Structures are given as structure tokens and as C-alpha cells.
Length: 466
Image (spheres, rainbow, N blue to C red):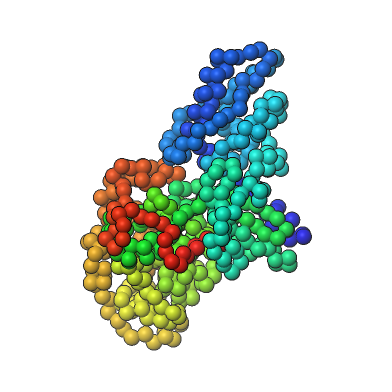
């Protein structure tokens, strides 16, 4: 029981606030309120009536005008209550539609009660709306089961949106798994169009339920559905979205440490989002020693394969290169079954490292113990013929042995490979989709059986949020 209390104290179970309000929708509601107030304003009455939102699917993807003020009227004084005030009082999740019952309650509050809430009172306000409660969500079916979690498809009664309910079993003595703790602590502060959104957290004695936005498929399943033959234009769009989300993480000193196609979710629009932050880690400064048991074997960089525990953002960039190769060819780049076999596959294609290509490698005891043959690097174009010259150059920059020279996510976004997507794609706000740009649209994949992408049709759906 004490461990449960410690866990509760460690994390505020409210979802981050400011970035997640759909301002356009609120502004529209507020404008309607002000018009109504001007028409039937009566002395001694509040100028706030029940809101009846009309959801706008693109509301969160456009710049909203400056927050309109809500006017609360009483006999004695006037109180200006802006949308920012609401945001500060309650940590409102994205896609929020405030229920009329709660607004009626808010309508009855006196101006004095509009002071900034404490964390406890803010959590109580959210609880009044329905957040943090299992009964707010309806289970629609089981998506899959992992080692310590079961994932269900569900629906929110507040928003009517589909959600993914990740139920993490809590052992009485051990408490919450460290992977769940990391996932919660990191995702609460990551708000980006290419990172899966954590909507809500529900804690009971037996389980911790994480409520995520629901996405139909993942990149591995997408590749399977198009017969492992993807349009090269689509490869470029997916890679840009991957790098965009990763750059956002790296700027905040967060390492994902488990990039692979199964952990990149895709919705029906083709929007790609980084998921499964169970192995992610906030990088401290100066660098601490981390575990080398990270990243799925096929996407693990050779420095980590050889035992390195001091690493930074380049650990993710090697995996990005492996994913680019896989999308362009339809097959994994280094499908090893053991660490030695994985290293052998890497060296056979990229060349056995030397002091010139990897300074200090000859002093690595683990490397010397394997006694690898001296392979010469092969031309990547012979293995990825569908990738153009700029694509080969980017792939080569991602797969450098020397981590100091390996290209960063931010630099990759500005690589010549993405020039055809246009300059305006770099000016999008973090929370806006790349598909807001008219020129950025997915094409029909050559290997797909139909002209439209139909997610969720793979025979063995691989859930990537366990």
C-alpha cells in the first residue's frame, strides 16, 4: 500500500495542460456566448450559458486567434476569465468537450473561487468532468496482450473518440513496472503531431490504465499490407514524420531507444506517430551510464552491440537508417538472431570497422574477441536500387560507425532527400500534421491490392504499445 502511495505522489495523474486545448473550438464557443450575452444580458445574472460544442476535426491543427475573454457579471464587480485561466485551473486534455453538467457547475462558482487551483483541487476538477475514472471509457474489444499489459480498443464517453486502453497489472509487492513509470513521466510532457498522445491515467489497486489516442495500424503492418513494395514517395513522407517526432524528442534530451516499424503507429490519414516509450530515457547532463540492453536487436547500433553504455541521441539514428532501408527494400537490413550474428551482418555490408572509420575500435576488447574477417564496405546502391542519390546519401549518413559523425534528426530533416516536400513543411507548428500541406499526400503503393490504404487488415496485428 505504501508503494502505491509513493507511486501516486511521484506522478500527478493529470494530463499536461496548455498545449492540448483546441483553441479554435473554444473560441467559437466563446464568441457564441458573447453574442448571446449582448442580446439577453440581464442585471444580476452570469453571462455564461451552457456550451454546446460542434466538434471541428481540424481545430487543433490551425493557429487560433488570441484567446477571447469570458465575462462573468455580478452586482458588485466584473471578472474577466480567459481561456488561459481555465487551462491553468484544470489540466485539460486535448480534444476536450466540456460536458454541460460541469459547465453548469462552473457557472455557479463565485469570482473568488477563480483563483489558481492547487494540484489537489485541479485533480478534483478533472475528476468532476470524468477524467481518471474507468467508467468514462467503454471497452470495445481486446487488441492484444503483452508481458505486463493488456491493450483494449475503447471509446471515451466525453469525446466519443476511439482510444487505446493499456491496462498494466500492478503486483502487490513490486508495484508498477519501471517501463510504465518511464512511459507516463515522459509522454505527459511530449505534445507533438508525430508522437502518440497520452489522454488520461487511471489508477486502481490492481492496475494502472493509460489512455492513448487510438491509431489503426503500425508501419510494419502497413508494409505487409502493400506486399513489401511501398511507393518511394510514401517512404519519404513516413521518414520525414519519423524524423520530425524524433527531433522533437532529442531537443528535449529524450532518447527513444526502441525504434522499429512496430513502434511507429499510423492512422487512416497516414499520420505516423512514435509510440512505446517504455525504454525511453531522459538523457542527463553530464552523460550517465545507461543499460546496453536496449533497442530491438535488428535496429541496435554496433556501439551498443559491443557493450557501450555511454551513448546519446545517435543511438536512435542508426535505427532510423535501418527503417529507411526496410521501407525501401521491403526486408529488414540486419536480421540477426544473436549479437554476434547481428554484428557479422553489419560488418559484411558496411565493412569491418577500422581506426579510420571508427576511432578507438581496435582497443575494444569485445570487438577483438570476435575475430571478425576484414570485410570491405559494399555500395549501398546495389542493395537499395529504388533509393535515389539523395536517399543513398542520407542512408549512409545515418549508418556511420563513428557516433560523433552520425547525422542528427534535426539535420536529417533539412537533408536534400526531403527537398521535394517543399519548404513550408518546415514551418508547421509542432502539433500540426504534415498533411495540412496540400502538396503532401500519400500515393497508391505499387504492391497494394487497392487504391486506398485500409489499416488493420493484417492477419497478425502487431500491437506496439505494450
